[in-house]
Image (tube, rainbow, N blue to C red):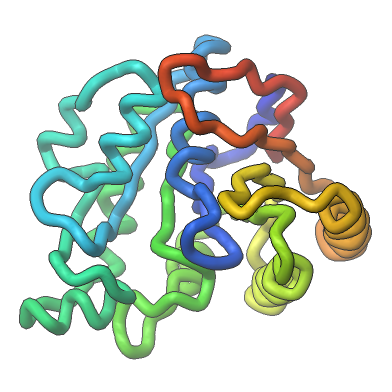
Length: 234
């Protein structure tokens, strides 16, 4: 695995939709970086549909093999959890609360002071609202976080992925990588998988020629994890 150094190694891991394996991808990327000797931590600033410790943080730590970290218990890796499984702005409103993007940014900045790389898992996709007016993409743009976009070979992924890429370009956000996650509960169609790969790669090279392409195998057994090789991030 090669990680080309930049001024900040903070990545927002976003996706084309819900249910595409973003949490597993985040944990696996962190695991691979850690295995190469890098100090890496993940964060899930807003978790909906659960109370207490963020479920996605628990997935990250299981894949990383670390158990909960001091930063988790201090609340730096997850600023907000809400019971309602809904968009963050709505879940917060149901509890008469409001999400403060500045608080999230400050927590990630504190993490980056102690770690080489911070992987920030977003909620859903780039246009998911954190407040009525502040979108997830605004968080990435305002803090100059690079993007890692998770997609899958399933039917419909071409449209959703290209929309995400064009959204990133319109907000002048840098895409570091696209992860082609072979997590398809309904099974893969080989022809669709290859064609989708070709179309997405073509437009990725047009819009973000320096971005990496990462193939992530379907991971269902956390006790027998594969080695992911050839990962390069901007």
